[in-house]
Structure formats: structure tokens, C-alpha cells
Length: 399
Ligand SMILES: Nc1ncnc2c1ncn2[C@@H]1O[C@H](COP(=O)(O)OS(=O)(=O)O)[C@@H](OP(=O)(O)O)[C@H]1O
Image (cartoon, rainbow, N blue to C red; front, side, top):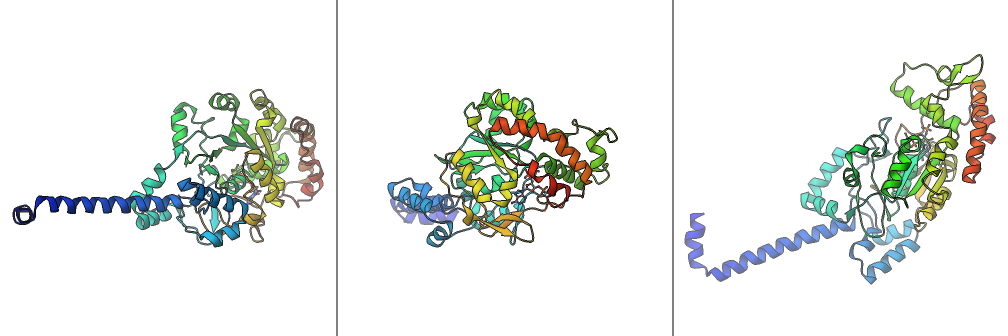
């Protein structure tokens, strides 16, 4: 130090020293900005379309339009892909709800990897870019309807940014305030929609009013599934965590001999969709709600996605090209999820094998739900055709 200040500083003119320091700083600044720019091209999401967004010039708008009009496969070939994968581990009820891929890394692993390869500066640049906004659309239900599959498919869309976990703001965390809620959201660029999913909102009494207070023009998405299968799915999840619980048949009845259904059991109560929808209709017009068929989401994911994208005012970018049917899983899976370039199916807590329920009980439950289902079809103007599934469910081929 003494050498530096004493010998060099005295020999080299101060002006040269100043110029040298200045050029070093400028170089450093330049590289920092470049690394920010790189990470903005592929922010957290492994999505080529972000290239078009980051600069916002006419030229980039053109690139964006090209991306919209080309198939995902073509776009990938044109622009290449770089993965800055951060696995989205869904900590919702039921354990591991992340999409599992052949090369899936844990959140900790990939975060560490990212830090090691990109450096802290880039991570900060990425996370600071854009603006955190309150959601403009929420998947409010229903539990076990297929909400995770829908959200993950939507996240493939370049104009959708969603929080991975379920925030449970309007039911469990409301007292934490809107700033807390907003802070959970990912940053968005102009034109992007912020979304979240918490399936319990649909059956939370205070949720419609609270959501209305936050944003009266919000778009609500509800994934509905045959209430009988949904109840069995719900029970299967609880059973996986508490194997000691009574059988489905025992829990479903107040009095089995009299055939008296226990509608206070949450697994059954959630499926009375008409009842819950009534509370939402007091605050929101039907035009602000979109109902997704959980059954169709499995047999025709692209078809359901087209309707959801239309409802959200998005270009139809998520199409059949994004899905493939995985025979082992028995479900459609994503060819390229938001955070990775490798195909991925949902985790093992989705698509579980259901216990075999006595056909008699299933028939009884169908009878119980029938009037509520009819009411629901009438209210929504959509026939979900659950009655036609009764036979196959009773035979055990649909559960
Ligand atoms: N693509 C794909 N892969 C796997 N599973 C799929 C898919 N699409 C819909 N489903 C159905 O989603 C059911 C789980 O629903 P949710 O994600 O809403 O569950 S949760 O409320 O978030 O726990 C889950 O219910 P179970 O089959 O009972 O496990 C699935 O039937």
C-alpha cells in the first residue's frame, strides 16, 4: 500500500491514474450491465419469447410477433434455449407437487447452481426487473380439480407469470395485508398477467368479498371435476398423510343404513359446487369466471388451454405441441415446462391410484350430487356431463 501510494502515485501523473481507474470502472459497469441483459433474455423462465420483450423496440416486437406465429418447435430451433432452471416446488398440501422431469434438480440444487454460474449480481438483476403486481387472474378452485396441471400449463405462456406455491392469502393470510401478498408475486413486464392458484378460495366464505375489494375486475378460473371422483381424490390425499383414518364409506355417511350422506365432511361438501358458486355470483358476474373441465383437461389439455387463453385475453400460444401423453404416468405432461427444457410430468401426488370404493356408495353419492350438479350446469350454462360417468365410476374404471 505504501509502495503504491508512495512510489507509483508520485511517479505516474495523477491524471493517468484517474483515467486508468475510470476505464476500469466503466469496463466493470459494462460487464455488469451485459450480464443483467443476458439474464433478462432468459429470466428464471426458460422461455425464448422473453428475447422479444426485453428491449421493446420495433425490431423486438417483430421477433415477438414471429414467436407468436410460429410453432414452439420452430421457435426453439430459431432462437435456441438456455436453461436457468429453478424447480418450482409446490409446498401445497400433499407434499411434492412439483413437476418431475428426467433431470429435475431440487430447488436448493438449482438455486445453488444458478448462483455459481451466474453470480449474485445477475440473480438480483433478474429478480428486480419488472414490477410486482397484484394478480389479475386467480385459479380459485377446486381442490383436486386439476388446478396444478392448469397453472403449470399456463406458465408456459410467455405472457403469464405465476407464483409457484399457493399463497392462501384470502383464507389463511389475509391479515398480512396486500403488500405481503404483492410481494409474493413474481415481477412482471408490461402486458404480462400475474396469477396465482389457491383452490381453497372457492369454498372460503370471505374470499369473494375480499377478492372483490382487491380487484373487482379480476378474472376467476375454476377447475371443476366430477364431485364424486373429486371426493375420492381428496380422501386419497388425506389417506396418504394419515393412513389411520376410517374408510371412505364410513366417512361418507351419517347413517349408512338410512343412506344419509354426511355433507358436512369437507371431501363431500367441496363438491356442492352450486352452493359455493352462489357466494361468488353475489360479487362477480359470470363473464369474469371461467370454468375448466377437469376431465377434459386430461383428455384434451390443448382444447381446454385454448379456452383459458381466450378468456384471459392471451394469444393461443400453449397448444397441442406443448403436451405429450406419458403412458407410465397415465396423464398428459409438458414437453417444455416454464423452468426447464426437459419434458415434465406432475409429481407423484398428482394422479395417485385411488382406493376402490364400494359401487353402492358411489351410486348413492351420484344420486346425492345430481340436483346440485344440475343447478351448477344451469348457473354456468355448461353441461359437464358427470351423470354420464356414473356407470364407469361404479365399475371402478374412472377412479
Ligand atoms: N396432467 C396431469 N397430470 C397429473 N394430474 C392431473 C393432470 N391433469 C389433471 N390432473 C388431475 O389433477 C388432480 C389434482 O388436482 P389439483 O392439482 O387441483 O390438486 S390440489 O388441490 O392442488 O392438491 C389429480 O387428481 P388425482 O388423480 O386424484 O391425483 C389428477 O387427476
